[in-house]
Length: 457
Image (cartoon, rainbow, N blue to C red; front, side, top):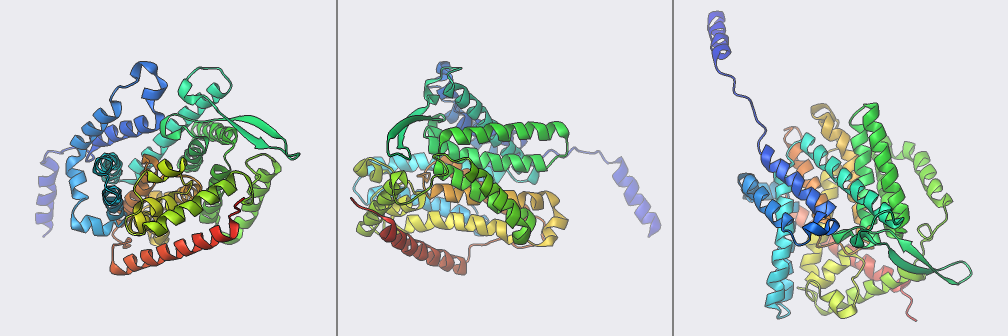
């Protein structure tokens, strides 16, 4: 036996060593480029690139490079193992059906194709961000791109540069004496052109930066990360977004609890809240009885009325804004109003599953088997919570960042499941029942909240 073992070792030692190249390295690099284009919006920042099909070319190249891995995500086993994916496909179907049911076939196919691109981005994310290192790289890229936008927006805010797409929004409000005053609010390009929308992604990036800093002990790395957080935080202040600040605070609270536990988190959370409230401004003046908050509650009421009128397929994607002139300022209610109970349940269920996916991996076994995933867990939970809270006052149901967050949760489960020690969330009849029950409870809660809070004048 000893001689046989020696022979086997010698045979292996003379065999040629083939370097192991990570699968999809080129596709992953293209995917990072695609993400940078989607977030940084170069065609809107550089006039010479206006109209250039950078996004279309990059997404086609990424798809061709990642096609075998993307196709694997469509197998029945993969769909059961990652239940967020069927929700995304279901939303895509409801985008089409909601408009077809209203007799608008041209709009239906236009909107369905547009959302199919978003679904494709989600599929490529879960196919390519297949290791903890790649997940970390994606989060760092998001931080860098959003910080880049924030720097340009701040420079535009103070008139150091002249990029029309970043020109601040002029808004108005009432001071303590009831007199109207006007002020400027920072905004970004493209899908972040509204101050509230850019604040939403700024908060997500702050949490991602905190994670990036925690992964390395290098002084230079931490100084760089701290500087990025400072820039992002200052940009949050300049947006004057109440909903964005509230989302960030909820995310930070979740992060503190995830890192230190409920008991030890009370003091840091209280200090954080006190520090924010000490700076009295429009952002810290949150009330549902008047101002923009009351305007949004009235829009929520309109959305619930539309839902009652078309409870199955909804009034059609995009039609709420066409009829009312404004978006619902609530991504979940907008999904119910425009896609009916089925579409709203799928959208709400996707984020419910995202939270459960991260919360499910609490065992110390994961900490032992994969410390990188264990370290990411509280930060990813904070990002998901912050994004959910932000969507309660924003309409972000049909934009890429929303499905970036869902993709991060699904990719995280995929990485964790590979440890082979814990079983991830799976698509089962029990899970479907839980999602439907949650959907009903959410609608009842929103109905009661609107009835109590709305003030018609």
